[in-house]
Length: 185
Image (tube, rainbow, N blue to C red; front, side, top):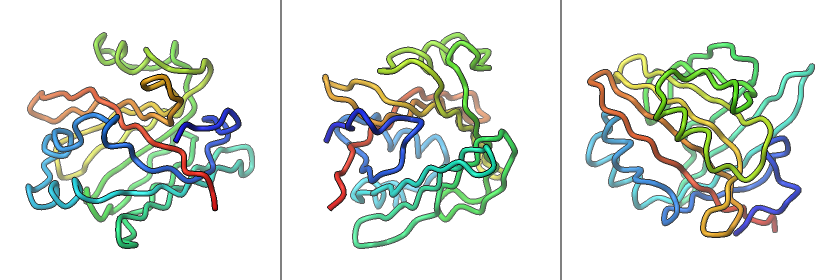
């Protein structure tokens, strides 16, 4: 379902599900991240719903995401504090990771690879700031640069996360995850 106009990157609270037919090759991303075949296949048949709460606390944006997979299985929460401070997490799927997040303008995005920058900055539906999230695996030999915002996909407005995933062997995947807005009951 298309995201209504009042749901924006500055007002992201709501319920979203990944649209697998519009998203990129999640299996390839997980393979690059060293995920086992069994775990990748399990993820491929699972639908994940994101319950997002966004609020400002003392002038800093907090985006808390509760992720519920098919059959009510809860996976690691994704809690972002947009102040660019590194935070360690022991993720149920990815193991020990360190992440940081902030608001960023496309023209100020600090990415040195020209192809990465072009991929991350083109194709957004709305101008203005995006959420920039970076995650580094402490044990898996990979890192992710992601921008979150809204884009038109096949003429429909969706919450989108554009990713650049890179491993220590030099392999790079540039892809996107597309989410459908789910109206609250």
